[in-house]
Image (cartoon, rainbow, N blue to C red; front, top):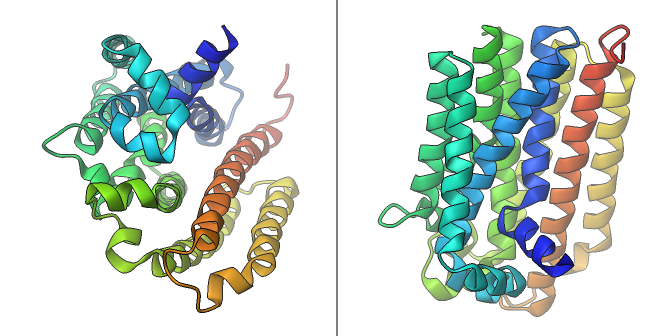
Length: 299
């Protein structure tokens, strides 16, 4: 039973679904500026369902590639067979039903938009997941949940726009890290992702640079929403953590090692896992910071 639950969690990438859930909850408190618990949890559930639908359909069509990059998930997906598509339809239906339940056309539109981008990302003949445009599509993964929140509360301030951009960029950079982790399978399948097109080392250095470029935007969002000190402390800790990791691995990152070096590939996979942890910790901090802004939030 545990293996089935673990496989299902891999199939829908539950950790990233939870990350988007936290993003929606935090964005709800920041946008409404009050303890809207029921609305926040409801919008978080919508974001989780959209992600689960989009990622499960990607894993259905990516099963052969996952044999190299994630053999455990590939094995579970193959065992599912047609049940995998049923899971896709269930989460798609839930997303649309929850969006329709708001009786807000703009909310429903953004829900549908998130699902459409999920199809464009994964399903032939589009398969943008195998192109250089993958980060652009992944931008919508983070942006759409915040746009749904903004539409739900009828807010379109510059602060909210900055939050949309920040979360969108976060998921876009996360997709670049995924490309590094999936380099072997992408290269073998003829995908045209950034690391395949420009070389693994250039792709790795570019992704690291993009990660650091997010820091000013994170600070800007904190200033716009007047987030508490906790936000900046956590941001500093995360920045120091990844910096120490890069310093520790600087010889592998910068030395003249052949591009097919197992050490270099291993570094890419390690940093990809690190960034997932950092992204989850950042979104958790953002959610907690949004709660701390509200007086008597637990009452």
